[in-house]
Image (tube, rainbow, N blue to C red; front, side, top):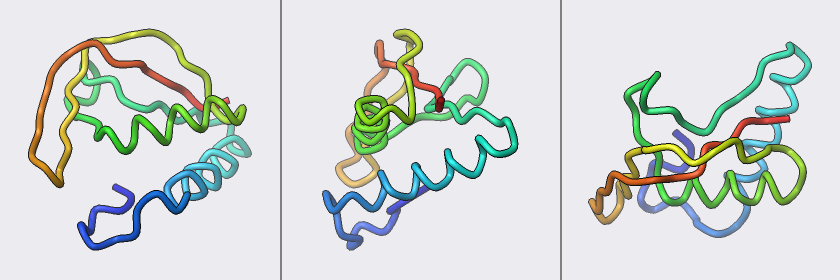
Amino acid sequence: QIGYDENAPRDKGYGFEAYKKIITELKKQNVTLISTDSNISHTSISPQALRVWEKLAEAGYAKKLEEIEGRVIDRFTGYERVGIIPAYESI
């Protein structure tokens, strides 16, 4: 997880830059990074990570695949929901 520390700076673009570097390195190895698929990994995603993936798609580093049923947990507020969320993959 990126930025798990509740005191870590937010909205500075650090997560976006970290994901960009990860995607760039994985692309060299022909590996695709996906945002989440709870059917496969049985995990959740944070609202903050979803925002980063949206920005990655806007910047051309990822694409939206589909809408899936997923679990979103905000680890700072404890808010949890299950619903339809966008799924992304790196390009």
